[in-house]
Amino acid sequence: MTVTESAPPGGRQLTREQLATLWATMCQAEALDSRIVNGIKRGEFATVIWPSRGQEAIPAAMGLALRPDDRLVTTYRGLHDHIAKGVPVPEIVGEVLGTSAGACGGKGGTMHISDPEHGVMMTTGIVGSGIPVAVGLALAARKDGSDRVTAVTFGDGATNTGSFHEGVNLAALWKLPLVLICQNNLYAEMTPVEETMAVEHVAQRAAGVGMKGVTVDGNDPVATYLAISEAVAWARAGHGPTLIEAVTFRFEGHYAGDGSSYIPAEQMAGARERDPMITFPKTLLAAGITQDQIDTIQAQARAEVDEGVQQAAKAAAPEASLIENDVYADGLVVTHG
Ligand SMILES: Cc1ncc(C[n+]2csc(CCOP(=O)(O)OP(=O)(O)O)c2C)c(N)n1
Ligand SMILES: [Mg+2]
Image 1 (cartoon, rainbow, N blue to C red):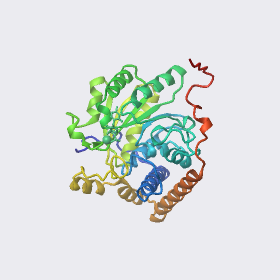
Image 2: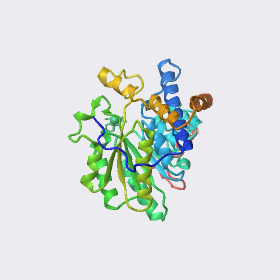
Image 3: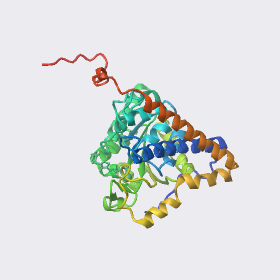
Image 4: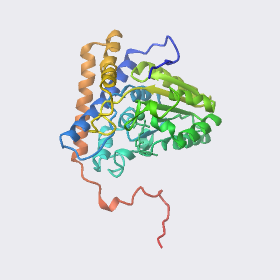
């Protein structure tokens, strides 16, 4: 697949501070993913994650484009999105490891992390199901009279579900303040995107419901930031939703340790050349950020992640007595029998 259209507005430059922020978020996401995947591989952690290694540019761009009070709905492959939205590392890892340090007290697991304080309203393992929920959150923002924007992230495979098609139709019809970010990593589990879609680009699907659609190089954090920030401004101004397709790749398999034998070697090699963790530092250097600064930001991210993982790992398991907490809304009276 080739990226035919790149991000909108030409000529906009990011400040060095913004570029450094993008890099810092990418480093945190990469460090978190690698730390957990390596821990699983060497038997340190008995858990499961759906790695996002390779996809770091997209959440970094999203994090920079959104306001802290903007909302997010993400997926099982969303630990990088949580990082970008500001969820503290121990709260993410506590869920992955099932300890009381987690954002949901360790009862959610990797697939069900929510942290409303940081705007993370839902993480879902049901492919496509986040989209209608995000449509509802965007409608709620309008009804509340708030200028809050809702972002929803999902994969290429999710755009083949009924939830996606129904959701985008309503969002376009009602011009909701929603930004739909498809992290197109070219595979749905072990199936390549060409075997599931007759259109070349996910973004083409937007035209069918009267929505703006943009395809962007999801390995380029600057292009992705420009596309997302334009969509956010458009949504916040009341003009409606945008479907952004950020084309990327994942290096660690559908789940940590699946072996990736279904990915042709040449495709993997080509993707590795576009690895944003390798290419973006060249942009940073060209913008006047020194190699020393680049390395320091990465080292800080790794140290912060290591510390957060340790904190989460040593926390106690959730109390059995809390098992029914957070199942029902506060104040709801449940009668049995
Ligand atoms: C409704 C539903 N159907 C099938 C599955 C099984 N499943 C889990 S992940 C996945 C692939 C989704 O691919 P994509 O949307 O591209 O996201 P990615 O995993 O690549 O990020 C499938 C089919 C599911 N979880 N939910
Ligand atoms: Mg995919």
